[in-house]
Amino acid sequence: MRVLLVGAGGVGTAVTRIAARRPFFERMVVADYDLARAEAAVAALGEKGARFVAARVDAGDESAVSALLARHDCDVLLNATDPRFVMPLFRAAFGAGATYVDMAMSLSRPHPERPYEECGVKLGDEQFALAGQWAEAGRLALVGMGVEPGLSDVFARHAADELFDTIEEIGVRDGANLTVEGADFAPSFSIWTTIEECLNPPVVYESERGWFTTEPFSEPEVFDFPEGIGPVECVNVEHEEVLLMPRWVGAERVTFKYGLGREFTDTLRTLHQLGLDRTAPVTVPGPDGPVEVSPRDVVAAGLPDPATLGDRMRGKTCAGTWVRGTKDGAPREVYLYHVVDNEWSMAEYGCQAVVWQTAVNPVVALELLATGGWAGRGVLGPEAFPARPFLDLLTAYGSPWGLREQ
Image (cartoon, rainbow, N blue to C red; front, side, top):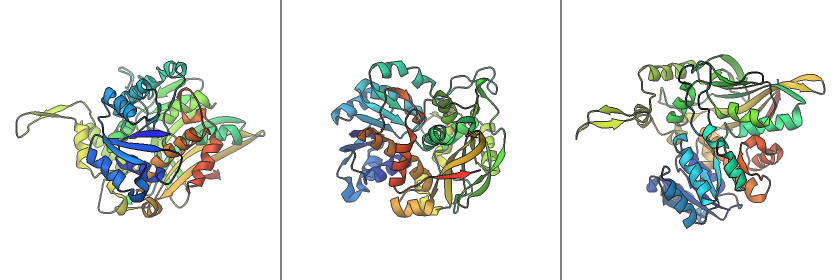
Protein backbone atom coordinates (compact mmCIF):
# COMPACT_ATOMS: atom_id res chain seq x y z
CA MET A 1 0.00 0.00 0.00
CA ARG A 2 1.20 3.50 -0.92
CA VAL A 3 -0.63 6.30 0.90
CA LEU A 4 -1.02 10.00 0.16
CA LEU A 5 -1.76 11.74 3.46
CA VAL A 6 -3.17 15.21 2.81
CA GLY A 7 -2.85 17.47 5.84
CA ALA A 8 0.13 17.67 8.20
CA GLY A 9 -1.56 19.44 11.10
CA GLY A 10 -2.11 17.89 14.51
CA VAL A 11 -4.06 14.85 13.31
CA GLY A 12 -1.91 14.32 10.22
CA THR A 13 1.29 14.48 12.27
CA ALA A 14 -0.18 11.96 14.74
CA VAL A 15 -1.04 9.67 11.81
CA THR A 16 2.61 9.62 10.74
CA ARG A 17 3.86 8.80 14.25
CA ILE A 18 1.39 5.95 14.66
CA ALA A 19 1.86 4.55 11.14
CA ALA A 20 5.67 4.67 11.39
CA ARG A 21 5.51 1.78 13.89
CA ARG A 22 3.50 -0.47 11.56
CA PRO A 23 4.80 -2.47 8.54
CA PHE A 24 1.64 -2.67 6.42
CA PHE A 25 2.48 0.14 3.93
CA GLU A 26 5.34 0.73 1.52
CA ARG A 27 5.32 4.54 1.27
CA MET A 28 3.45 7.48 2.82
CA VAL A 29 3.59 10.86 1.11
CA VAL A 30 2.85 13.60 3.66
CA ALA A 31 1.42 16.59 1.79
CA ASP A 32 0.35 20.00 3.03
CA TYR A 33 -0.19 23.48 1.64
CA ASP A 34 2.68 24.50 3.92
CA LEU A 35 5.63 22.39 2.76
CA ALA A 36 7.61 23.25 5.90
CA ARG A 37 4.90 21.71 8.05
CA ALA A 38 4.93 18.49 6.00
CA GLU A 39 8.73 18.39 6.17
CA ALA A 40 8.64 18.88 9.95
CA ALA A 41 6.21 15.97 10.36
CA VAL A 42 8.54 13.68 8.40
CA ALA A 43 11.73 14.94 10.08
CA ALA A 44 10.25 14.29 13.52
CA LEU A 45 10.11 10.56 12.71
CA GLY A 46 13.90 10.29 12.65
CA GLU A 47 15.11 6.82 11.70
CA LYS A 48 11.49 5.61 11.43
CA GLY A 49 10.85 8.08 8.60
CA ALA A 50 12.52 6.16 5.77
CA ARG A 51 9.16 5.26 4.19
CA PHE A 52 7.87 8.85 4.37
CA VAL A 53 8.35 11.78 2.00
CA ALA A 54 7.09 15.38 2.26
CA ALA A 55 5.32 17.25 -0.54
CA ARG A 56 3.39 20.44 -1.10
CA VAL A 57 -0.16 20.41 -2.41
CA ASP A 58 -3.24 22.62 -2.34
CA ALA A 59 -6.04 20.37 -1.06
CA GLY A 60 -8.57 22.40 -3.04
CA ASP A 61 -6.79 21.79 -6.36
CA GLU A 62 -8.17 18.49 -7.66
CA SER A 63 -5.82 18.23 -10.61
CA ALA A 64 -2.76 18.86 -8.42
CA VAL A 65 -3.88 16.21 -5.92
CA SER A 66 -4.54 13.68 -8.71
CA ALA A 67 -1.13 14.43 -10.21
CA LEU A 68 0.55 13.90 -6.84
CA LEU A 69 -1.22 10.55 -6.43
CA ALA A 70 0.02 9.50 -9.84
CA ARG A 71 3.56 10.83 -9.35
CA HIS A 72 4.08 8.68 -6.27
CA ASP A 73 1.94 5.76 -7.47
CA CYS A 74 -0.30 6.04 -4.39
CA ASP A 75 -3.31 3.76 -4.20
CA VAL A 76 -4.92 5.39 -1.13
CA LEU A 77 -5.69 9.01 -0.23
CA LEU A 78 -6.12 9.72 3.48
CA ASN A 79 -7.77 13.10 4.07
CA ALA A 80 -6.58 14.80 7.29
CA THR A 81 -7.76 18.30 6.35
CA ASP A 82 -10.82 20.18 7.59
CA PRO A 83 -14.22 19.41 6.00
CA ARG A 84 -14.01 22.25 3.47
CA PHE A 85 -11.66 20.10 1.40
CA VAL A 86 -13.62 16.84 1.52
CA MET A 87 -15.20 17.12 -1.92
CA PRO A 88 -12.15 18.17 -3.96
CA LEU A 89 -10.07 15.41 -2.33
CA PHE A 90 -12.92 12.90 -2.73
CA ARG A 91 -13.18 13.72 -6.46
CA ALA A 92 -9.41 13.72 -6.92
CA ALA A 93 -9.12 10.24 -5.43
CA PHE A 94 -11.86 8.93 -7.72
CA GLY A 95 -10.29 10.53 -10.77
CA ALA A 96 -6.92 8.97 -9.94
CA GLY A 97 -8.38 5.52 -9.27
CA ALA A 98 -7.40 5.58 -5.59
CA THR A 99 -9.16 4.40 -2.44
CA TYR A 100 -10.37 7.36 -0.39
CA VAL A 101 -10.50 7.60 3.43
CA ASP A 102 -11.60 10.59 5.52
CA MET A 103 -12.42 11.45 9.12
CA ALA A 104 -15.17 14.01 8.47
CA MET A 105 -17.72 14.16 5.69
CA SER A 106 -18.94 16.74 3.18
CA LEU A 107 -20.52 19.80 4.78
CA SER A 108 -24.19 20.33 5.49
CA ARG A 109 -26.37 23.33 4.72
CA PRO A 110 -29.34 24.14 6.98
CA HIS A 111 -32.87 24.10 5.64
CA PRO A 112 -33.52 27.62 4.31
CA GLU A 113 -36.91 28.02 5.98
CA ARG A 114 -37.15 25.49 8.86
CA PRO A 115 -33.54 24.99 10.04
CA TYR A 116 -34.50 23.66 13.47
CA GLU A 117 -37.15 21.21 12.27
CA GLU A 118 -36.08 19.88 8.87
CA CYS A 119 -32.77 18.86 7.34
CA GLY A 120 -31.42 20.78 4.40
CA VAL A 121 -28.31 19.29 2.82
CA LYS A 122 -27.07 16.69 5.30
CA LEU A 123 -23.52 15.81 6.22
CA GLY A 124 -22.20 13.41 3.59
CA ASP A 125 -25.04 13.98 1.10
CA GLU A 126 -22.63 15.12 -1.62
CA GLN A 127 -20.50 12.01 -1.16
CA PHE A 128 -23.38 9.55 -1.02
CA ALA A 129 -24.82 11.12 -4.19
CA LEU A 130 -21.77 9.68 -5.98
CA ALA A 131 -21.87 6.26 -4.30
CA GLY A 132 -23.11 4.56 -7.47
CA GLN A 133 -20.11 5.78 -9.45
CA TRP A 134 -17.68 4.45 -6.85
CA ALA A 135 -19.45 1.09 -6.68
CA GLU A 136 -19.66 0.76 -10.46
CA ALA A 137 -15.94 1.50 -10.73
CA GLY A 138 -15.23 -1.14 -8.08
CA ARG A 139 -13.54 1.36 -5.79
CA LEU A 140 -13.95 2.23 -2.12
CA ALA A 141 -14.50 5.51 -0.31
CA LEU A 142 -14.41 4.85 3.45
CA VAL A 143 -15.99 7.93 4.99
CA GLY A 144 -16.11 9.11 8.61
CA MET A 145 -13.21 6.94 9.80
CA GLY A 146 -11.80 8.99 12.70
CA VAL A 147 -12.80 8.51 16.31
CA GLU A 148 -16.17 10.31 16.16
CA PRO A 149 -17.27 9.49 13.53
CA GLY A 150 -15.28 6.31 13.12
CA LEU A 151 -14.62 4.24 16.22
CA SER A 152 -18.03 5.24 17.58
CA ASP A 153 -19.60 3.71 14.45
CA VAL A 154 -17.51 0.54 14.83
CA PHE A 155 -18.90 0.27 18.36
CA ALA A 156 -22.45 0.51 16.96
CA ARG A 157 -21.73 -2.31 14.51
CA HIS A 158 -20.24 -4.43 17.30
CA ALA A 159 -23.29 -3.84 19.48
CA ALA A 160 -25.65 -4.90 16.68
CA ASP A 161 -23.60 -7.98 15.78
CA GLU A 162 -22.70 -9.36 19.19
CA LEU A 163 -24.38 -7.59 22.09
CA PHE A 164 -28.06 -7.01 21.18
CA ASP A 165 -30.96 -8.72 19.46
CA THR A 166 -32.90 -5.46 19.07
CA ILE A 167 -31.70 -1.86 19.50
CA GLU A 168 -33.98 0.90 20.71
CA GLU A 169 -31.45 3.73 20.86
CA ILE A 170 -27.83 4.45 19.97
CA GLY A 171 -26.35 7.58 21.50
CA VAL A 172 -22.78 8.67 20.90
CA ARG A 173 -21.53 10.39 24.05
CA ASP A 174 -18.24 12.31 24.07
CA GLY A 175 -16.75 13.82 27.22
CA ALA A 176 -13.44 14.77 28.82
CA ASN A 177 -11.87 16.34 31.88
CA LEU A 178 -9.05 17.98 29.91
CA THR A 179 -7.69 21.33 31.03
CA VAL A 180 -5.09 23.60 29.44
CA GLU A 181 -2.80 25.42 31.83
CA GLY A 182 -2.74 29.17 31.37
CA ALA A 183 -5.67 29.31 28.94
CA ASP A 184 -9.27 30.28 29.66
CA PHE A 185 -10.45 29.15 26.20
CA ALA A 186 -8.26 26.79 24.19
CA PRO A 187 -10.16 24.11 22.20
CA SER A 188 -8.33 20.81 21.96
CA PHE A 189 -9.55 20.29 18.38
CA SER A 190 -9.91 22.52 15.31
CA ILE A 191 -12.05 25.52 16.29
CA TRP A 192 -13.18 25.82 12.65
CA THR A 193 -14.67 22.32 12.81
CA THR A 194 -15.94 22.79 16.38
CA ILE A 195 -17.91 25.89 15.39
CA GLU A 196 -19.31 24.11 12.35
CA GLU A 197 -20.63 21.08 14.22
CA CYS A 198 -21.78 22.90 17.36
CA LEU A 199 -23.64 25.85 15.84
CA ASN A 200 -25.28 24.02 12.94
CA PRO A 201 -28.69 22.50 13.68
CA PRO A 202 -28.13 19.10 15.35
CA VAL A 203 -29.59 16.10 13.53
CA VAL A 204 -31.56 13.34 15.27
CA TYR A 205 -32.76 10.10 13.68
CA GLU A 206 -35.97 8.23 14.55
CA SER A 207 -37.06 5.19 12.57
CA GLU A 208 -40.64 6.41 12.20
CA ARG A 209 -39.69 9.99 11.35
CA GLY A 210 -36.33 9.75 9.61
CA TRP A 211 -33.76 12.52 10.04
CA PHE A 212 -34.81 15.84 11.55
CA THR A 213 -33.14 18.79 13.29
CA THR A 214 -33.34 20.56 16.65
CA GLU A 215 -31.96 23.75 18.22
CA PRO A 216 -28.19 23.84 18.92
CA PHE A 217 -27.27 22.53 22.41
CA SER A 218 -30.71 20.95 22.84
CA GLU A 219 -31.73 18.07 25.16
CA PRO A 220 -29.02 18.55 27.83
CA GLU A 221 -28.25 15.53 29.97
CA VAL A 222 -25.56 14.59 32.48
CA PHE A 223 -23.60 11.51 31.43
CA ASP A 224 -21.16 9.74 33.76
CA PHE A 225 -17.95 9.00 31.85
CA PRO A 226 -15.59 6.17 32.89
CA GLU A 227 -12.00 6.05 34.17
CA GLY A 228 -12.29 8.97 36.53
CA ILE A 229 -13.69 11.55 34.12
CA GLY A 230 -17.05 11.53 35.87
CA PRO A 231 -20.33 13.34 35.13
CA VAL A 232 -20.35 15.87 32.28
CA GLU A 233 -23.31 17.77 30.82
CA CYS A 234 -23.79 16.72 27.19
CA VAL A 235 -25.91 18.42 24.50
CA ASN A 236 -27.00 17.67 20.96
CA VAL A 237 -24.63 18.78 18.21
CA GLU A 238 -24.49 17.99 14.51
CA HIS A 239 -22.34 14.94 13.81
CA GLU A 240 -21.84 12.34 11.12
CA GLU A 241 -22.74 9.26 13.20
CA VAL A 242 -26.42 10.18 13.14
CA LEU A 243 -26.27 10.24 9.33
CA LEU A 244 -24.17 7.07 9.05
CA MET A 245 -25.46 4.57 11.61
CA PRO A 246 -29.07 4.25 10.36
CA ARG A 247 -27.79 3.25 6.91
CA TRP A 248 -26.29 -0.01 8.24
CA VAL A 249 -27.46 -0.53 11.83
CA GLY A 250 -31.10 -0.99 12.81
CA ALA A 251 -32.12 1.32 15.66
CA GLU A 252 -35.27 3.19 16.61
CA ARG A 253 -33.36 6.37 17.55
CA VAL A 254 -29.81 7.72 17.04
CA THR A 255 -28.30 10.83 18.65
CA PHE A 256 -24.93 12.49 19.20
CA LYS A 257 -24.24 14.50 22.35
CA TYR A 258 -21.04 16.31 23.18
CA GLY A 259 -19.80 17.20 26.67
CA LEU A 260 -18.90 20.81 26.01
CA GLY A 261 -19.46 22.45 29.38
CA ARG A 262 -21.48 25.60 30.05
CA GLU A 263 -18.57 28.03 29.61
CA PHE A 264 -17.67 26.54 26.22
CA THR A 265 -21.25 26.70 24.91
CA ASP A 266 -21.61 30.28 26.15
CA THR A 267 -18.45 31.24 24.22
CA LEU A 268 -19.77 29.62 21.05
CA ARG A 269 -23.10 31.41 21.45
CA THR A 270 -21.25 34.72 21.80
CA LEU A 271 -19.25 34.04 18.64
CA HIS A 272 -22.54 33.38 16.85
CA GLN A 273 -24.19 36.53 18.20
CA LEU A 274 -21.23 38.60 16.99
CA GLY A 275 -21.21 36.91 13.58
CA LEU A 276 -17.74 35.54 14.18
CA ASP A 277 -18.82 32.02 13.24
CA ARG A 278 -19.47 33.04 9.63
CA THR A 279 -17.34 31.67 6.81
CA ALA A 280 -18.36 34.24 4.17
CA PRO A 281 -15.68 36.94 3.87
CA VAL A 282 -16.18 40.43 5.27
CA THR A 283 -14.21 43.49 4.20
CA VAL A 284 -11.88 45.06 6.76
CA PRO A 285 -9.26 47.82 6.47
CA GLY A 286 -5.70 46.71 5.72
CA PRO A 287 -2.35 48.48 5.45
CA ASP A 288 -2.59 48.42 1.65
CA GLY A 289 -6.33 48.90 1.38
CA PRO A 290 -9.48 46.84 2.07
CA VAL A 291 -8.99 43.12 2.67
CA GLU A 292 -11.59 40.33 2.60
CA VAL A 293 -11.34 37.85 5.48
CA SER A 294 -13.53 35.10 6.89
CA PRO A 295 -14.54 35.87 10.51
CA ARG A 296 -14.23 32.21 11.43
CA ASP A 297 -10.71 32.07 10.01
CA VAL A 298 -9.83 35.10 12.17
CA VAL A 299 -11.10 33.31 15.30
CA ALA A 300 -9.06 30.22 14.38
CA ALA A 301 -5.94 32.30 13.76
CA GLY A 302 -6.32 34.03 17.13
CA LEU A 303 -6.41 30.79 19.13
CA PRO A 304 -3.48 28.45 19.83
CA ASP A 305 -2.95 25.54 17.44
CA PRO A 306 -4.52 22.53 19.21
CA ALA A 307 -1.53 20.40 18.18
CA THR A 308 0.75 22.59 20.32
CA LEU A 309 -1.25 22.28 23.55
CA GLY A 310 -0.12 18.82 24.64
CA ASP A 311 2.54 19.94 27.13
CA ARG A 312 -0.02 22.16 28.87
CA MET A 313 -2.94 19.73 28.81
CA ARG A 314 -3.96 17.53 31.72
CA GLY A 315 -6.63 14.85 31.91
CA LYS A 316 -8.38 12.31 29.73
CA THR A 317 -10.73 12.27 26.76
CA CYS A 318 -13.44 9.66 26.19
CA ALA A 319 -15.24 8.73 22.98
CA GLY A 320 -18.02 6.19 23.20
CA THR A 321 -21.33 4.76 22.11
CA TRP A 322 -24.22 4.14 24.49
CA VAL A 323 -26.68 1.49 23.33
CA ARG A 324 -30.05 0.49 24.78
CA GLY A 325 -32.10 -2.52 23.63
CA THR A 326 -32.74 -6.18 24.36
CA LYS A 327 -30.67 -9.37 24.48
CA ASP A 328 -32.23 -12.82 24.91
CA GLY A 329 -35.56 -11.18 25.74
CA ALA A 330 -34.18 -9.03 28.57
CA PRO A 331 -33.44 -5.28 28.59
CA ARG A 332 -29.79 -4.35 28.21
CA GLU A 333 -27.89 -1.07 28.24
CA VAL A 334 -24.15 -0.68 27.63
CA TYR A 335 -21.53 1.99 27.00
CA LEU A 336 -18.66 1.03 24.69
CA TYR A 337 -15.81 3.48 25.07
CA HIS A 338 -12.22 4.43 24.34
CA VAL A 339 -10.26 6.61 26.76
CA VAL A 340 -6.90 8.28 26.10
CA ASP A 341 -4.86 9.89 28.87
CA ASN A 342 -3.00 12.96 27.63
CA GLU A 343 0.00 12.12 29.80
CA TRP A 344 0.28 8.72 28.07
CA SER A 345 -0.16 9.99 24.50
CA MET A 346 2.40 12.76 25.04
CA ALA A 347 4.94 10.40 26.59
CA GLU A 348 4.42 7.64 24.01
CA TYR A 349 3.89 9.64 20.80
CA GLY A 350 4.44 13.33 21.55
CA CYS A 351 0.81 14.04 20.56
CA GLN A 352 -1.99 15.46 22.67
CA ALA A 353 -4.80 13.06 23.49
CA VAL A 354 -7.60 14.36 21.26
CA VAL A 355 -5.59 14.42 18.02
CA TRP A 356 -3.95 11.08 18.80
CA GLN A 357 -7.31 9.44 19.49
CA THR A 358 -8.63 10.77 16.18
CA ALA A 359 -5.55 9.67 14.23
CA VAL A 360 -5.17 6.09 15.44
CA ASN A 361 -8.44 4.91 13.91
CA PRO A 362 -7.79 5.66 10.23
CA VAL A 363 -4.37 4.03 10.59
CA VAL A 364 -6.02 0.87 11.96
CA ALA A 365 -8.51 1.01 9.08
CA LEU A 366 -5.72 1.38 6.50
CA GLU A 367 -3.99 -1.68 7.92
CA LEU A 368 -7.21 -3.69 7.67
CA LEU A 369 -7.64 -2.58 4.05
CA ALA A 370 -4.02 -3.43 3.26
CA THR A 371 -4.23 -6.92 4.79
CA GLY A 372 -7.71 -7.81 3.52
CA GLY A 373 -9.42 -7.67 6.92
CA TRP A 374 -11.79 -5.08 5.44
CA ALA A 375 -12.89 -4.87 1.81
CA GLY A 376 -15.72 -3.14 -0.01
CA ARG A 377 -16.85 -0.99 -2.91
CA GLY A 378 -18.86 2.20 -3.06
CA VAL A 379 -19.17 4.95 -0.44
CA LEU A 380 -19.24 3.14 2.89
CA GLY A 381 -19.15 4.11 6.55
CA PRO A 382 -17.34 2.12 9.26
CA GLU A 383 -20.62 0.35 10.11
CA ALA A 384 -20.52 -1.44 6.77
CA PHE A 385 -17.55 -3.55 7.90
CA PRO A 386 -17.16 -6.25 10.59
CA ALA A 387 -16.28 -4.66 13.92
CA ARG A 388 -14.33 -7.42 15.61
CA PRO A 389 -11.18 -7.23 13.38
CA PHE A 390 -10.98 -3.49 13.98
CA LEU A 391 -11.42 -3.70 17.75
CA ASP A 392 -8.87 -6.50 18.04
CA LEU A 393 -6.31 -4.56 15.99
CA LEU A 394 -6.93 -1.35 17.96
CA THR A 395 -6.07 -3.28 21.11
CA ALA A 396 -2.95 -4.64 19.41
CA TYR A 397 -1.91 -1.03 18.78
CA GLY A 398 -1.68 -0.65 22.56
CA SER A 399 -4.91 1.28 23.00
CA PRO A 400 -7.66 -1.01 24.31
CA TRP A 401 -11.36 -0.18 24.41
CA GLY A 402 -13.86 -0.85 27.18
CA LEU A 403 -17.45 -1.94 27.78
CA ARG A 404 -19.54 -0.89 30.77
CA GLU A 405 -22.92 -2.37 31.60
CA GLN A 406 -25.20 0.52 32.49
